[in-house]
Amino acid sequence: MTTSSHPTRAEERIQTLDIVRGFALLGIFIMNMPGFSTSFYAEANGSRLWSDPLNHYAELVRDMLFSGKFNSMFSLLFGLGFTLQLGRMMADDPQHATGLYVRRLLVLAAFALLHVMVFWNGDVLHIYVVLGFCLLGLRHLSNRAIVGLIIATLVYPPVSGLIRLAVMPPEVVAQLVADAQAWEKSNNLAYGHGSFAVAAGEHTREFVHTYGTRWQLWGTFGFYVQMTTTMLIGFLIGRNGWVRRIPELMPKIRTLQWWALGLGLACSLGFGIIGEFTRTPGPSPLKILRGLCYIFSRLGLMSFYVLSIVRLAQLPAWQRRFAPMAAAGRMPLTNYLLQTLMATSLFYGWGLGLWGQVGPAAELLLAPVLFFCVQVPLSMAWLRRHDYGPLEYVWRLLTYGRRPGSAVAVERA
Image (cartoon, rainbow, N blue to C red; front, side):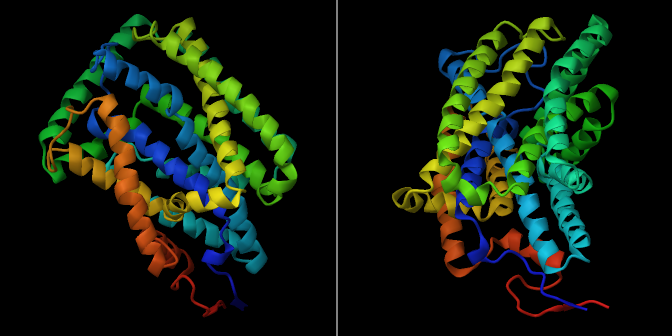
């Protein structure tokens, strides 16, 4: 049998989604900077690495305006992209579409495992792979059932917090703090002073640890739930064709935009204020309230950012201004992994060795500088000569078994 199934061509892309994806990459870089420059286990005892006013307020701004908002934006785009990609595959070759999408996820899993176990343990791609398989299983559910699942993901965090109050006694909290401090010390040696091979070994150890203990697995599962919320929202948007109805939906978009801003700012303010009084390790009722503020600040501000970009992207003048962001957004895998390469080269001991020496204020400036001075120009230059980013090209090549853009049909027995 001959099939015309093909990778998405440049002319088939939706520019608005590329623009949103470009902004998501910038926000993710800003948000990930602390994880590149210091241990994820730092401050486990409630202390502060940076207590001076400038860095303290920069940390607050980052946590309130960026933390959780842009990886949520990326997961929303992943869920939306799932419906577009699988829908096109089904239209081209219904018999083999599911298998082709599974192969696409498996190739992404290979990138993700290499990334998380060798280069940086903050990888989110392997989570998208797992949730991508879940979307395959959920794709036949009704809209009402998907909305029910979204509500369940919003209910889970406070329920989980209440369970922690009941089952996590002080001695367990003390042991978890001690374990985190041991990991912080190990991270500082491996990432701050070790060779590339030593750092890679530490990343592998951390990845196994993340899924290897009951308490760590509980926390990891909570992050999966957060990503599921926005991924399912993106799935609904894509399934119902709302992206291609943006001009028609503009009045609703404007109304939702300002409601999202109000919700997001109010909850971000609550999250920031409560956070100042809940640094002591261990569960508490106040931390459950802070968690609720975080959940709805993520959804509110993420939605406001996306809707604002979408509105502006409909105007020709802003389309021209956003063209550099769209170029970065057309190469999401390449740029996401390039951020790891740049940041670890700066901070790790095998690079410039700035581990633990750059505070939140400098990081808030460093990420946009690297993004606009390195990633955006590289993306624009590359796409003048190529239709796909280098890693996007490899991803499609391994998925489809032929060069992207090739008109050669794949013969199937």
